[in-house]
Structures are given as structure tokens and as C-alpha cells.
Image 1 (cartoon, helix red, strand yellow):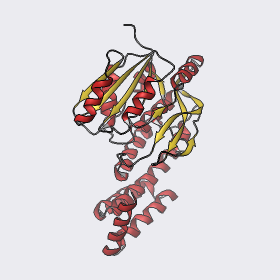
Image 2 (tube, rainbow, N blue to C red; image 1 turned 90 degrees about the vertical axis):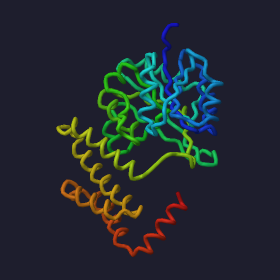
Image 3 (cartoon, rainbow, N blue to C red; image 1 turned 60 degrees about the horizontal axis):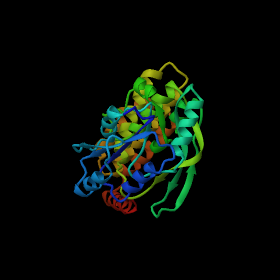
Image 4 (cartoon, rainbow, N blue to C red; image 1 turned 180 degrees about the horizontal axis):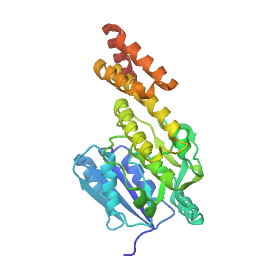
Amino acid sequence: MPSPAVSIILPTFDRLEYLPDAVESVLAQTFEDWELLIADDGSAAPTRAYLRTVAHPPRVRVLCLEHTGRPARVRNAALREAKGEYVAFMDSDDVWRPDKLAVQIASLRARGGCGWSHTNFLLLGAAGRPAREMRAAAGWILGPLLRTETVIALPSVVAVRALLDEVGGFDEELVMCEDYDLWLRLAARSAVVAIDAPLTVVRRHTQHYGNPAVSFRDSLRVLDKVMHTAAATPYASVIRRERAKNCASLARCHAASGDRRAAWRTLLSTAPASWGHAGWWSEALKAVTVVLAPRGLRSIVHRHRQRSA
């Protein structure tokens, strides 16, 4: 069969409550020249049974992988199998509007100088009610991404495969922030097309994997990589400021979890390069306050945060 125009990458791991809606939103696309690669990160039997019902090679293929808990590795496994000229990213708990691919592919084909595209996305709360619409930014957006002024939802992105090959896939050393890392590399090489319509729906729910300390740790790896390539650019000061703030936030996370030694170690090791940034001081003072608080008070605060999570 001829190669499809679009390869859709969809990783999953035991999220059967939401996965069928994600798959159905792909099948409902008005743009029909695509292949769907579902990379299963070692799910349990119920999810595997569902995936057998939707697998229809060569158009819908399921890659059965051993569990790693690293989305970057799962996505890369599917990316290596992709045959399309374009790659669209999807998550197993989110939904596309039926015309999403049609609009994005037409926009990319009309703008040969842009190698990727993203859409506005609608955030849904835990009860399934729309919470807010996040707007897509156009053009050369490396600066806004570094300053966290722009947020890109992974399932809103379609990229030219040749550009992905040029910048490399997802960084498999990252447990979190692997999508942000890729957006920064894409933004350094190409302007982005922004679709000013909420063609992507992103769910917020209690099944999300997340660890604040891991997130800040991995964001530091991402910023260090960018600094290595952008040290002589106007973005260097922005990177140093964001890195300083994240260092102190990591210390605060360690303190909040009761790991006082890790909190002090993070503060002391990052202070020489970070103390000149106000963002580091504000987060560092929060970390010190938690570390120095009486043990009983720290326990109460920790239990309160667990109940609120």
C-alpha cells in the first residue's frame, strides 16, 4: 500500500476509561489518509483485549511493548514505525474534533516554510465540564516557550516528518517534560502554524501520572540542553532565569515531601549560579520555611497536600 499522508502516534497504558473515546475521535476524522500506531506500554489484560478489537493492519497497528513507564520511549517506538509525511501526536485520554487533521494538514501544505502546527485546545475539568480554552501561538515561538508564556498540548501538534528526523525524537532519558523538550527543538528550527480554533480537547482527571519533583528535575535537564546550544543567543538570560526558578522549586518539592537532606543539597548546589535571580529566592525561601518548620507542622502540611492532590 502507498504510504499514508499522516502517521498518528498514540501511546497508552491501562487507561481504558478514556482510550476508546480517543481512538473513536481518530476514526471520525474527515481527513482519511492516515495510519494509527497505538503503542501499548505493557497494559493489563482488559486494555489489551480492547486493543485487539481496534487493530486492523496496516491502517491501525498496535505495538505491544514491555512496560517502561517512560512515555518518550513508547512514543519513539511508534515513531520508528511511522510511514507518513506528517506525524500527529495523540494521548490516550484526549479527543480530537473531526476536522482537526484536515485543517492542520491544509495549513501546513499552504505554508511550506513552517514545519509544524498546533491548535487551540479546550481543557476539561474532572467532571467533564469545559474549564478554559488555551490559545495557540504562531511564528517563531522559542522565546515564549522558554518563558512559559505559551503552552502546547501534545495532542494538538502535527509536524513534518522530515523536521522531526532533523531534530530527533523524544529524549528517552526524560520521565516527564519530554514533549516540552521536543517543542523547544522544533521551535529553534522552524516557525509554527497556529490554528485559532479548539480542535483538541484535553482532559484533566485523577489518573494522570505526575510527580512535581521529577517534573522539575527533568525540566532542568531540558533547560541545560537548550543552554548548551543557545548560550550565545538572546535567550541565554531567559534560560538562566527559568533554570534558577526551577532549581529552587525542586528544593521546595523535596522539602514538602519530607526529604530535608535533598532540599538542602539542592539549594546549596544551585545557589552559586542562581542567587542573582528573584525567582530562585522566592522559591528557596518557601523551601527553607518548610525545612525549618517543626516536624509536627510539616506532617500536617504533608497530609493536607496529599488529601488535596
